[in-house]
Length: 276
Image 1 (cartoon, rainbow, N blue to C red):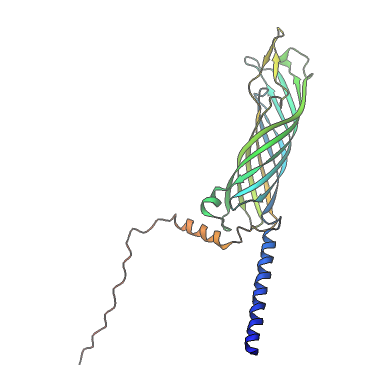
Image 2: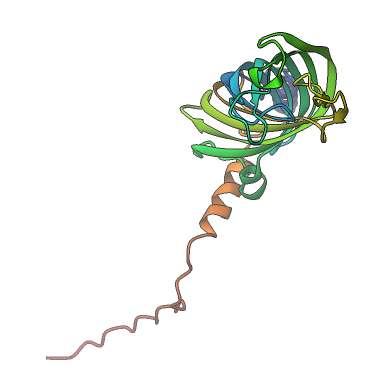
């Protein structure tokens, strides 16, 4: 009787340990910092609008944060601060018609998609990992346009000032190079189409006769940055051996298979003993 009671108590103890371990694992998986990464960055922006034919490049600084949503899709928040500039030179002239400067803040919310993780599974030993970026964005701008010597107006005089918040969409691509499990070097190029034509403060222009002409389309700019990405806590997906196994099988399938068919070896025949 005592033997059966001892076995029952031991079984209950083992079950309680397993339940506590599983609950601790679930708590660990629900931590916010698990799969959360932050990326300080710096680089350049290139503006393409009505008031630019040269000198379109200027600086930008920013920070991005991502949180894993699935094994290949991350939620993303992006914040940039920088300055735009440009010079317009009309056809047949060598003197600038106008110049502009714009200090802007860009806030974006979107996602990143990692095609290698989708196709081959997460793999800790993968040094390079490209990804695609899609975002909805808001741009707070403060632009000033100046007359140039080719405008037949006082050079450097303020022509227009525009400020406001413009919505837009952003698409781009990035690449991570992992130095270790937590730190990676990151390069990104993101293009933004603003639903606004006044990022250069130039929506219309007037000729010598005083006629007003509307300009074409909306403004567009690229942001190219490099940065360092830090992962606060290891990914719940990378902790799963299922994904490492999937990556291994997918990678192994890329190697060329041997053309020779496998043949089972013949059974060894017992050697005959010869009498002397």
